[in-house]
Image (cartoon, rainbow, N blue to C red):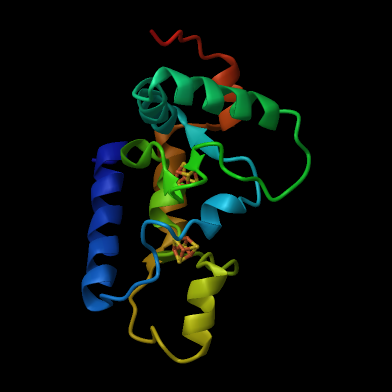
Length: 167
Ligand code: SF4
Ligand code: SF4
């Protein structure tokens, strides 16, 4: 079966394996460089958006309003990279961590043929000879499984159709 849940489970297993074999892995709370420099607007399948939406609705009202304003403003922003609107800038943490899209779950642990995909910090360690034994996840497989879940739309497009008034 290929659902968003099974995809998450498979990604979690790969991430867990890498973390277990590399206890000092760089990805941790407070390391937010990847969230501060998104090359493009995040794209989400419908299933990912449904989960993301739950995350948005779980935010306290003031945070929801702040995030909503940021996402709306991003629709008109042409400058790149993008700072993810879901990033708590002072904590360096994702405000919807449990609800985050697949790309955020794989980043730093998966690589893509011809593109790489590990972040520069991890790449530097790799170039220095560390991490040679890491069994990276294959992002081509993830993309294929995501495409089976349906078409993707930009976060700003999903959000434009979203109507929710926090209490
Ligand atoms: S992918 Fe890179 S920047 Fe992002 S949390 Fe991991 S080490 Fe930090
Ligand atoms: S959704 Fe969360 S984990 Fe993903 S880029 Fe934004 S802040 Fe980072």
